[in-house]
Amino acid sequence: FLSNSWLFGSLIAGPLQRPSREAYDFVIIGAGAAGSLLAARLADDPSTTVLIIEAGATDKHPLVDVPLSAIFLLESERDWRLQTEPQGK
Image (cartoon, rainbow, N blue to C red; front, side, top):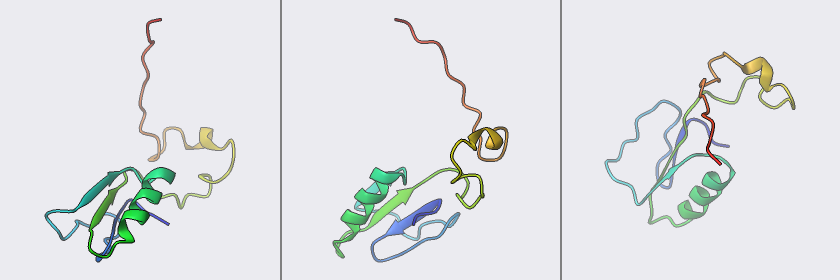
Protein backbone atom coordinates (compact mmCIF):
# COMPACT_ATOMS: atom_id res chain seq x y z
CA PHE A 1 0.00 0.00 0.00
CA LEU A 2 1.37 3.39 -0.94
CA SER A 3 0.41 6.76 0.38
CA ASN A 4 1.28 10.23 -0.95
CA SER A 5 5.04 9.85 -1.04
CA TRP A 6 6.94 6.68 -0.27
CA LEU A 7 10.55 5.83 -0.65
CA PHE A 8 11.43 2.21 -1.23
CA GLY A 9 14.78 0.59 -0.56
CA SER A 10 16.75 1.15 2.58
CA LEU A 11 14.54 3.99 3.86
CA ILE A 12 10.79 4.62 4.09
CA ALA A 13 9.38 8.15 4.20
CA GLY A 14 5.72 8.66 5.03
CA PRO A 15 3.27 11.13 3.52
CA LEU A 16 4.32 14.77 3.49
CA GLN A 17 7.81 13.95 4.72
CA ARG A 18 10.87 15.13 2.89
CA PRO A 19 13.10 12.31 1.67
CA SER A 20 16.40 12.25 3.53
CA ARG A 21 18.63 11.58 0.52
CA GLU A 22 19.78 14.03 -2.09
CA ALA A 23 20.09 11.46 -4.87
CA TYR A 24 18.30 8.24 -5.81
CA ASP A 25 19.02 5.55 -8.33
CA PHE A 26 15.43 5.68 -9.60
CA VAL A 27 12.61 8.22 -9.27
CA ILE A 28 9.11 7.00 -10.14
CA ILE A 29 6.39 9.60 -10.69
CA GLY A 30 2.95 8.18 -9.94
CA ALA A 31 2.00 5.47 -7.46
CA GLY A 32 -0.71 3.88 -9.55
CA ALA A 33 -0.65 0.20 -10.40
CA ALA A 34 2.29 0.42 -12.81
CA GLY A 35 4.35 2.88 -10.75
CA SER A 36 3.89 0.87 -7.56
CA LEU A 37 4.82 -2.39 -9.25
CA LEU A 38 7.87 -0.87 -10.91
CA ALA A 39 9.06 0.71 -7.65
CA ALA A 40 8.58 -2.54 -5.74
CA ARG A 41 10.52 -4.52 -8.34
CA LEU A 42 13.36 -2.00 -8.41
CA ALA A 43 13.48 -1.93 -4.61
CA ASP A 44 13.94 -5.71 -4.50
CA ASP A 45 17.61 -4.99 -5.14
CA PRO A 46 18.98 -3.82 -1.75
CA SER A 47 21.79 -1.91 -3.46
CA THR A 48 19.39 0.53 -5.16
CA THR A 49 17.37 3.41 -3.79
CA VAL A 50 13.97 4.26 -5.24
CA LEU A 51 11.84 7.33 -4.64
CA ILE A 52 8.18 7.17 -5.63
CA ILE A 53 6.18 10.38 -5.68
CA GLU A 54 2.39 10.59 -5.69
CA ALA A 55 0.32 13.75 -5.57
CA GLY A 56 -3.05 14.24 -3.99
CA ALA A 57 -4.91 13.40 -0.84
CA THR A 58 -4.90 10.00 0.82
CA ASP A 59 -7.42 7.42 -0.31
CA LYS A 60 -8.92 7.02 3.17
CA HIS A 61 -12.18 8.80 2.26
CA PRO A 62 -15.06 6.25 2.33
CA LEU A 63 -16.34 7.25 -1.12
CA VAL A 64 -13.03 6.60 -2.89
CA ASP A 65 -13.68 2.86 -3.14
CA VAL A 66 -17.41 3.05 -3.92
CA PRO A 67 -18.22 2.60 -7.61
CA LEU A 68 -19.99 5.58 -9.19
CA SER A 69 -19.35 7.78 -6.14
CA ALA A 70 -16.89 10.12 -7.87
CA ILE A 71 -19.64 12.68 -8.37
CA PHE A 72 -19.80 13.17 -4.59
CA LEU A 73 -16.07 14.00 -4.51
CA LEU A 74 -16.39 16.84 -7.04
CA GLU A 75 -15.34 20.21 -5.64
CA SER A 76 -13.73 18.53 -2.64
CA GLU A 77 -10.05 18.48 -1.70
CA ARG A 78 -9.72 15.45 -4.00
CA ASP A 79 -10.93 17.37 -7.06
CA TRP A 80 -8.07 19.12 -8.83
CA ARG A 81 -10.58 20.99 -11.01
CA LEU A 82 -8.64 20.28 -14.18
CA GLN A 83 -10.34 21.41 -17.35
CA THR A 84 -10.11 19.87 -20.81
CA GLU A 85 -9.96 21.66 -24.11
CA PRO A 86 -11.60 20.59 -27.37
CA GLN A 87 -9.15 18.80 -29.65
CA GLY A 88 -8.97 19.33 -33.40
CA LYS A 89 -9.80 16.44 -35.70
